[in-house]
Image (cartoon, rainbow, N blue to C red; front, side, top):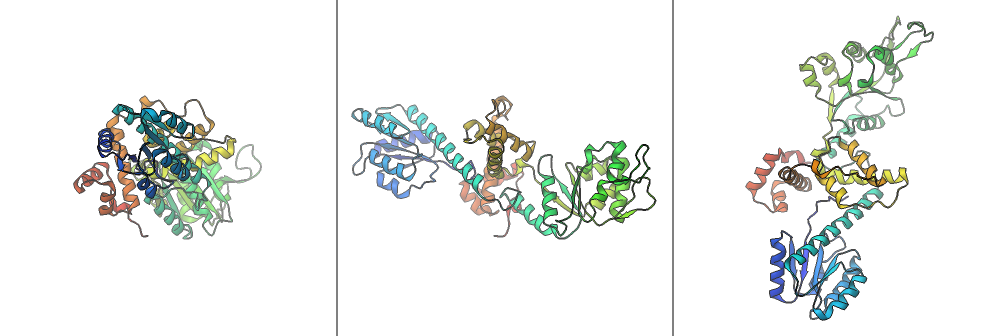
Length: 446
């Protein structure tokens, strides 16, 4: 799905050079990007179905007039917003054009703010039309990987998964809540030689300390009062497969020494058993926090940390890879549509603004929940605007997103990114330094 921040431009068509220049100046003063054309043929020579902007055209022009241009533009894209400028005698023709799909018309003489308001509405409408098209296209496009996103960080992560999966080494996955750590663990398992064997996931933070040892290690027959038969623990159940220790930073301290022994000896001793059970397993652990920081605070065993930290994969939070939000949202909308049977979702300006402005502290999980709310048409899927960031913070976040997008597009080529953004070199470096952006992180082979 194309990024929702793509550049928009208004094309203004009028054969009168003085009126053309005056209206272009009006639009530029309103901070609307505008391009002027002296005739309809020049517009048709350059227009494409994916044009991101809107057209304003005078009706009375030599050669091809505005109404003929409108008809030709409808053949290119019937949803392209076209605003017609009319003289008094042309108003009935303009009204007829409205019935045929013209976006609006302005009757001469018109106030400058009327032109600006009509142009702003047309551009906003076009943006939503293209966003909805992109949403449908992305939802129908086949996905090569369940790990969606084309940001440099996600490309590197998929490459790392492919390399590490077959190595049969233990892996530590770090990432905030909701970033998809269990998905990465499952991908590692499915791409490994152990794919046909069990994938056993243990939610370490949810283990009651009193029952943690039995849950993990199992117990021998009659080892637990009132329980006659032996019980196989989660660790032994993963023999010849993969053991996924989710949120291991929440594992009770009392259990950590026994887990360390399992990792070192590759054997497990059930509670009450006399002999250990040998194991052939791969261990993948995940942590939502910084395990090293927990070690320094004495909240996690250092020897267990170093035993787990053989290969480390880091999943960046969604706020640091904002170009992935659009394709992820499209995938979740498609999933929600299938599961709920609620078809016909259309992007609204409120949803679009939330996707662009929100910081997504709950990461991919929060985005998925938002997509389901939007598809179901719940009363208020978008949080109160008062809860949004202040304007300077939103501007800074938007600039940082555009800087990252330019570096993504140019694969970290600073010179090309500066040309793409159209800003001075010093301004570029000042902004990336303020945003903590490192161009080298976006460089990857073609």
